[in-house]
Length: 78
Image (cartoon, rainbow, N blue to C red; front, side, top):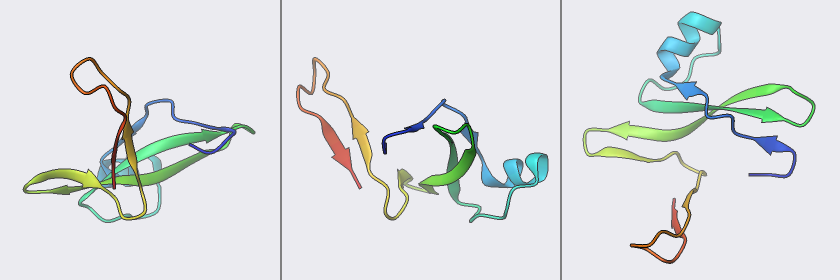
């Protein structure tokens, strides 16, 4: 993430977030993550597309998975 931006782990279905928190409409087949800027402001960003085949990165988003014992190299999707 960009400097000064953190991901607190919050997020959810865009339809639920729109109804519950009066957020702007986003495509229903997405997953939304909440990020927090250094000044404390929050932003809700689509990070995944949910398809019948599973989830994949939203266009323009990269998922970065750290190395593990099984996969010793960082993995980037998107």
